[in-house]
Image 1 (cartoon, helix red, strand yellow):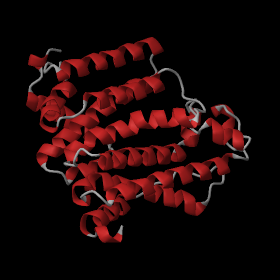
Image 2 (tube, one colour):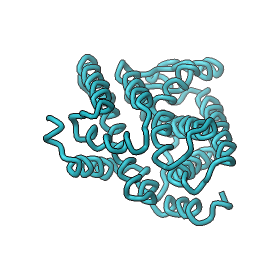
Image 3 (cartoon, rainbow, N blue to C red):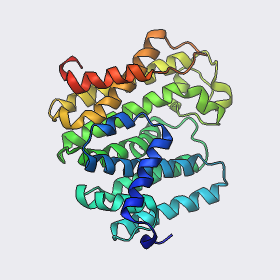
Amino acid sequence: MTAAAVTPEAARRHAQETVKRSGTSFGPGMHILSKERREAMYAIYAFCREVDDIADDDGPLTQKRERLTTWREEIERLYCGAPTTPTGVALMEHVRRFDLPRAEFILVIEGMEMDAGGPIVAPTLEGLFAYTRRVAGAVGMLSMPVFGAPRSKTAEDFALSLGDALQLTNILRDVEEDAAEGRLYLPYELLKDHDCPLTPEEIAGAPGLPKVREEMAALAREKLAATRRALNDLDWKILRPALLMMGVYERYLDMMTARGWANGQPKPKISKLEKALIAARWFFAPKLR
């Protein structure tokens, strides 16, 4: 498909429909943005969704690598002003308007290459945070200029700490689900410290797994605390979309902590009503956070 075949309006619809189809919990946060900023976030999300789908595809490794390489090439075309995909065209005006950093798009692709290269199994802590920097931190770094945050070390600390916190919480929620797919994102050091098996096939029910989860939760709490410290020097109003996500994921973490870390518990879920209440807390009553 050539750039001429994708009109800006069609590209915007494509990005919006991608968000709608996904049912993402990021949706409510996007709705509070202005139309211009919301469309930018739709385009960023569509990019992340498409490369993530490549990594999760059941196709052969060589094919997945080729498709991710094609996306690397599309990012180069995007920054030359000549994207050829609907999502690339949807991104183009926002890359210019918000000065979105090319390196962060490439980092997202690198994160998908880590997943696509074979199941991630018991990475070191260093390797785990290299992964979260790519699949979550980079998304935060792309989002901050869209929200209107200043380019500063504090804004970067906010984006990266929150990205780590969200991804660590996701890992805690999805241990059994990931293991069923041959993945084990829990770090090698914690698994070894608690005599846990280093393979996804054996992790479910391991006696030491509750302690591993508890320590992972503590890491997530540290990242949330770092996010709040950075927020003290930023304008919370422009960061409300990110704060809504923080509220939802902190609630997941609270739910898991309250019930304890015993093996075999179901994945925690939050109702639409509770998500709406969390959103209202940040939108109308930030002092209660």
